[in-house]
Image 1 (cartoon, rainbow, N blue to C red):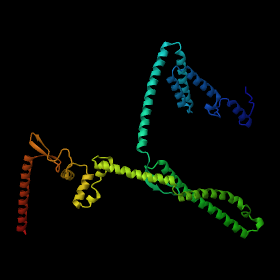
Image 2 (tube, one colour):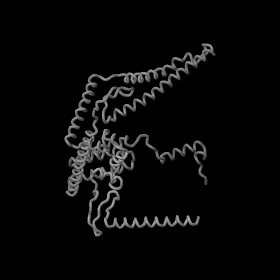
Image 3 (tube, rainbow, N blue to C red):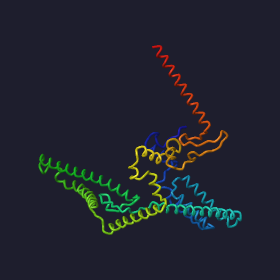
Image 4 (cartoon, rainbow, N blue to C red):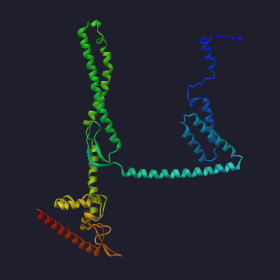
Length: 388
């Protein structure tokens, strides 16, 4: 017995009926993301409000708010499901704490943990704020009393040390923009010139009624002229910025900063004359002797001064030079100690402890070796002379 099919297999009507039958089992991708669907947004908002309403303390309420803010940008369905399960489990615990003493104790302990974490976070923030404030004070810009003259990148400004990063970034940005806009202006001028040459060439070959470029020349050139004016206005403003001068209040401020700098340096010199060692004093002493003293040094003395300044070693040549200059070395030159072998003395040149008895014995042995070598050399020379 054969079954009569409603449509012939392979026909368009058969394919359409088959597609209609299978369309219900096909996975359909939603047209909008799930976080914009009201079926997800409304229950989630209700869950959030219920958690805030059933929160027993302010610490737990703040933790709930932080929990939702931390996960509000999740787009993975599996992660969102896990977060919502955790939130619903927490809501059940809040509701159960109203009648269960054990759950109530657990939430109280959780509140104490959150309070300790909040205190730690607050103290760390206060500490970091204090460190940031100290860093800003140490690196705050100070007027040096010098002038930073105007340019295409910046108007006239006082010289500051250290220079604020915003000024450096503005200078770098405007210099780069100036070069870019200059190139764009030249390229637009080249395009306008090409249009004019093309229209002129066409006017010489074709009759006016058959021309294509000349009737629409103004329409094609209008956007180019507008862009050219825009870039030219920016470049003109940059050039005018470079021609600007210092205002009188700014000039007076820079001059006053120069006076203050001189007064501060004078106070520093007076403190140094009184015997106080400042940061600048130690820095200058590490760079070597003053210029008027260095000019009188011999080449050997200059090399010694360089060794003292740059060498960190306390033995060998550097140690010998530093010892002669009276620098404190550890251990000091000619410092002695007593050991099982006798009294030993520290030698900066050798970089070791020296025993006087051993040194005399080694010196005698050295002399014996030198005499033996000399005798053998004379014998070898005499043998060579006899053979020749």
